[in-house]
Amino acid sequence: MYKTPAIVLRSRKIGDTDKVLTLYAANLGKIEAVAKGVRKAKSRLAGHVEPMTHATFMLAKGKSLDVVTQVETIEPFAALRDDLDRLSRAVYVCELLDRFVEPHADNFGLYRLLLATLRRIAEREDVDTPVRFFEMALLDALGYRPELEECVACRTKLAPVLNYWTAAGGGVVCPACRRDEMAVRPISANAVKLLRLHLHGRFSDVSRVRVDAELALELERALGEYVRWVLERDVRSAAFIDAVRRRRGVAHGIEPRDVGYTGAATAANAED
Ligand SMILES: [Zn+2]
Image (cartoon, rainbow, N blue to C red; front, top):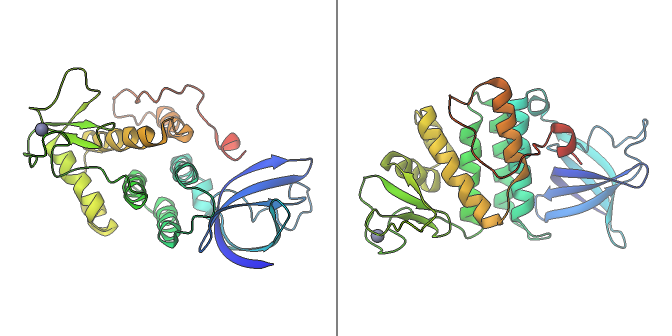
């Protein structure tokens, strides 16, 4: 038996009444555990094992999977479930962490980052800045820090002009090195500056910057592209965020980005 605080990243149904939970535990990293009978109406565990719940788990070592014996909720994060904008961002960060990390790779910094990010998404009016900050911190923590100071091709210091962003190249490429055949997107001097602040600053520094919709979208596209390149596949819940935005008509008149994925996840199937 062991006890650990953890955040539920996702859950999937197994058997008639059970669920397998993917947890991100404080000092254990990502682990999977079975919550037996949790889909029965009278389960004591139900209500404590929903995705994004922060709880203390009592677990028993099992033959293949460990078994949840007791759960005590620390933070239910109800605010994340009551609002589609918040929910879509929270599902996205949980999915991102799940897909970026290997099981049993302990990283207390990432645990704290996830917790802080969920709290920010639950409490703040601007739900996107916490996601951008999380993406950059996650990339940095796992060794994928993008190059934001020098051109990735010629290694000269970047001038504050319109440069180009290349996910495959690992950062910014200068106008002189840009080739037509490269998969690049223009990136403004302000966007590069703001990305640097995401990388080196604290969240309080980043959240103080006034960001207009166009700049916010530039950052979202650059980091999103980088994340997808690292994962070599689309992040399913990014399409969910886009679907929520379309529904609300808050896409700022800009076409939703092409994520190459048409079946937008819903809150219901994000849980499975
Ligand atoms: Zn160059």
